[in-house]
Image (cartoon, rainbow, N blue to C red; front, side, top):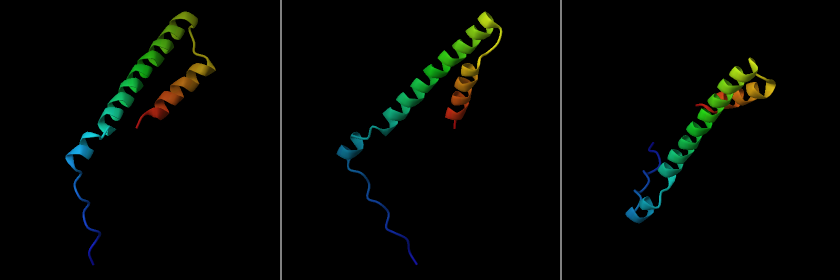
Length: 68
């Protein structure tokens, strides 16, 4: 019993239109920048207030959930 035939390779013109790698790079870049802002916020709130509020814990939870 054989499986389905392998897919045909993409033509060069179609492969050149593939924006997947660029989108992945942008997604991870913006995720990294957002993570730096969250870390900065947490550090500044710790120094200024001495403790974190409920909103800070929600932000930290969201950032942890964002990871792979």
